[in-house]
Image 1 (cartoon, rainbow over the protein chains, first blue to last red):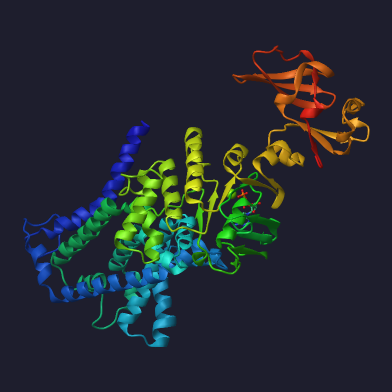
Image 2 (image 1 turned 30 degrees about the horizontal axis):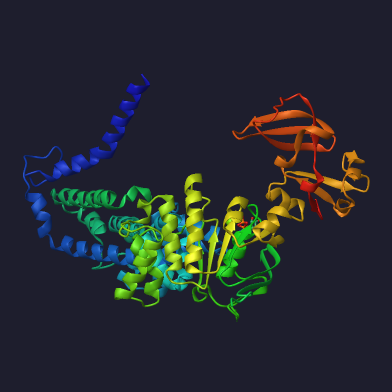
Length: 258
Length: 341
Ligand SMILES: Nc1ncnc2c1ncn2[C@@H]1O[C@H](COP(=O)(O)OP(=O)(O)O)[C@@H](O)[C@H]1O
Ligand SMILES: [Mg+2]
């Protein structure tokens, strides 16, 4: 009986999780001109068409640049921060840990609004700088968390051993710590990249005229484009995220870090 | 002639906040000596080693190595090697690269690097394992890599912090004799930290016993084994029966001391090893409360007016069972005199 209930619940969960995706993916295969489900006929024309749309190509490139740039920045900030908290008694370390993980708790839309109202507008930041700032702040907590996990697998005495063999503290960090948290950093990069690339709420406040990310652009396009190209694009992006995560899981064991 | 004060620790105190882990310790180590630092867990051994290596600052005191004051020399410039209890190998580097690490930092390369690494790896018997990663080695093999990595840079002083404590008993014996050989072959001055007195006795030229951050006693293995001066060291060295001496005589057995020579009267306590308690005869009486068979010998627990005593006798001699009343003797010529119990 419990077994049956369990299977029923699992089935329901799968329908809720995968259902929308299957509907969107299906709608993209339509041969008609309208975004409807079930699709009218079957063709790959919309999956081909998305590559022809100029505005999506531009915002795709921007989203890529933004995701790579802000994730690299987040790692440059997050790795030293995670290292300092793991190895030294940082004054107020518990507070910093809480603040650093806060964006996981604070709704991104509030963070985006606050960033716009109290940083971007007062400082008159250009749109791209505002986006990089917002996304870096968004991604940095992931970097700190993931790198912290991989640092706990490296005993501090390994660095001390390097120092006693003649390395400086800095030398030991580059020769011993970095190589051993490399997988963690790559995992953080992938998580950060996907988080930034798919991010809507923060970007919503920070995008401006002519500078917009792909998800925001798609949101805008949906108001006047009724053909299945959006469905096809959404499906391709979802597949991209899923394959990156699957490959990362195989190569890095991504799930160990999250 | 070797320098008798090659390593000089002078009045070293080390505190973690309010906890004093090492309290006014002074030790001199002659060049080439293998000194064992012996003491129970928590007595400050690791703290002292880390301070000598430069990983921890002294609160007060000074360290001189080979006539040079190194108190403020940073750890990477001290030429002091430390073999960690956990081995602390570099997980991402092969055995070869682990051993080569210190040499590469010294800008040694090419044939010379190859030769010295090969030599060190051969010395610890790990030929053929050069390309393995640490996680592909057993505990004993990791220990050998840690040793090779430390000695290949020819440190002025080699510290080993409980290096065998993570190995099983058989491997411990094997590594113990390898360490002995290594010390003899290299002639490097070594401090060997352990909480195991048999290890200290077997390996060391000299032993320093620590208790609660202080030096309790130091001397040759014979000195400590035959002539401990305090109850603490005596217990460590296997004198498990320690009886206080009062002006009336032996505690709980007044008058019995008359039988002894007057020379024991100035002691505060007397101690006997279990195997020196004579069972089945003698002026003392008690009751057997426990007997445990240990192969060659049987160990008895005896309740007497002098307290609970532990005795050990060969299995071939007379046997006793729990509950038996028993006479026994504590021969004064086998007792050590202790200045404190
Ligand atoms: N990092 C530390 N912070 C505070 N107290 C410590 C620290 N390391 C060790 N201690 C304390 O110092 C004392 C000596 O510890 P340690 O040197 O590790 O002893 P041992 O190596 O002989 O077991 C112990 O009481 C221990 O609790
Ligand atoms: Mg210790």
